Amino acid sequence: MRFEELFAEISPEEITDNVFTLAGAVFPVVTVGNEAQYNSMTASGGGMGLLFRKPTTMLFFPSNRYTLALIEAERVYTLSYFPDEYREQVLFLGSKSGRDSEKMKEVALTGIALPSGAMSFQEARLVLECKLTQITTPCFPDDFYAQEAIDYMSEPYRDLGEHRKYVFGEITGVWMKKVLEGWGADGRCVSSNYCATPASIRRGS
Image (cartoon, rainbow, N blue to C red; front, top):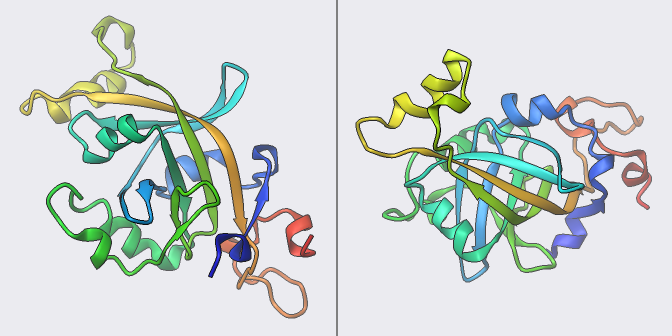
């Protein structure tokens, strides 16, 4: 099945999900590559906003992540958001590295190529395509004032000699699922995981 048959393109301004839900309560899957070879990982934290006057996503990565190296090389990636029923598979993608495993063959999700050739999954309900804008390495401890921020940036990786990186990507495309199982025959929402969708898509336009 082609991507355009499952998903309808919308603008970033038409995303109706709460940004704090997308950044915190729902774990996006970050995917880099093409149909021949791609890798995914589970992200947590981050956010969305405007950078250089363009809609942008922000992610946090440990500097040794395989997916981060792929983002640096490819400079295009997707963020895919799933209904709760796929939570186990989403977490599985964050449980091991694609550098030394076959997790993309093991995960019970179906890869699908966007029109650009970037990859997402048929089971996703919301897909953001991003073009790498900037990777920043926080270097100065004095830049952080809250103790939680200081602990977050340093403690988990002190023994490994690793650090975190901020990844900023311009949102170049947004797609929502066309066929929404959460809508009943009477037009009422029966699953909030599917119903946060612009009316234009529900009408099939």
